[in-house]
Image 1: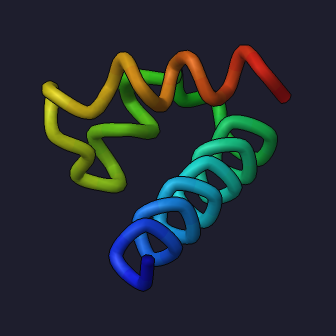
Image 2: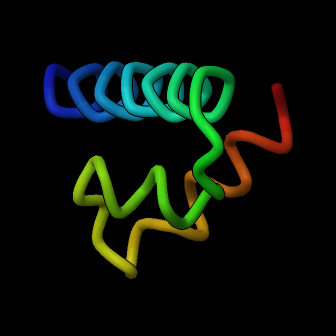
Length: 53
């Protein structure tokens, strides 16, 4: 249970960071993910999360 909550919290915080970066810079989504060091394998998940905003 704790691992699941930690994963969800991390995803939400990272999504919020991505939105903040995108709203305050001229970076592309991939540029923002590069800045945060998001691995290539996780990027499709974050792209989907951002579509649901």
